[in-house]
Length: 156
Image (cartoon, rainbow, N blue to C red; front, side):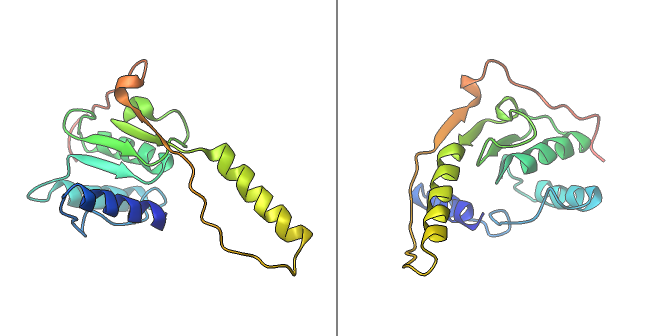
């Protein structure tokens, strides 16, 4: 996950966007109890200049954020947007997001298993560090057949 945060910060800087450490952080979210997630999200939203989009590191976090925004009574899209750094999760998340990255998960797994097999075959051999770049796709709401609107009953 640190690689995702690093890439996000690099992209912000490349486009001249100020990096806000309070909002640009790698934090645990979807594993927190409901009350702690809601408190964290409320603190973000109650800032003088609240975020207009939540960029979630993975699909499970995005699904929890969508649920929590609805509990707080916010509309997605409308009052806030969601974006994801991958499209893995409990269901297809594109209908909930303005954009989602599509990772080459199959190719990532294949390459990792090839590296593991080489190490198993030759445990005492040299084990170089490899940096492999694979293409990432970006899917946008415009490419979806439909999108979902999350509407909450009222802010808690």
